[in-house]
Image (cartoon, rainbow, N blue to C red; front, side):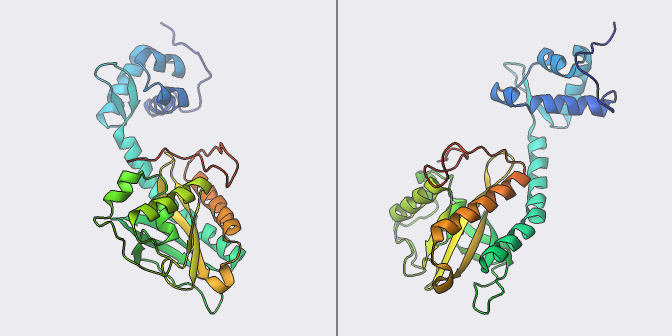
Length: 282
């Protein structure tokens, strides 16, 4: 039986590797993921292959964890190992792509910029780009700060639900850091909601007296928050027009997110009703 030619074959598609890649691309399509996967016949139609060829390729991909088969519906989905590999690549890509973004923010504002992640309930700074000014925020690379009294902390919690936030703090009262630090979980939650509404977080003398900062979340290819961009500096120099500065940092974070594979689509005006990210989780 002659092979179907439902679509032009790309160079390399005749190989087993090429067939496997075509199948993974088909399973990663928007409608396939929205429908919970594809059956063998549906995949065969999409890639222009015989059902027997697709079945053999799927068995190999499943053996390596690159696809999963639902035992009840018999449809195939992208497998856990593929997401693990993508996540690992995303972390490396984040560290490769972030430095020029931090440098651009320092050039724009003349203040120190940081890249941070959420690690064991704290904010861990992965890298800092220092301000050229004599008086500037410190290099916090490798250091940890509280999540509740920093702009980066709130940016990293932007998709958390209220219950998830409450579970992070065993006591109702929160440790006081700076003069404007939130003192309880209810106040922290109100500030998270305010940050969620505009897509970025502001901290005015919350971590320490005289220090202000703005931060926005960085998302991976799944739309999940994996890091935060932060710019901080002395209040006497950086404290004016924090909202406008927050928009710039949010734009920088969106650009970095795109480089990590996030297909961003804004559904509301900037600064009005928030950003188009994942739903909050409890």
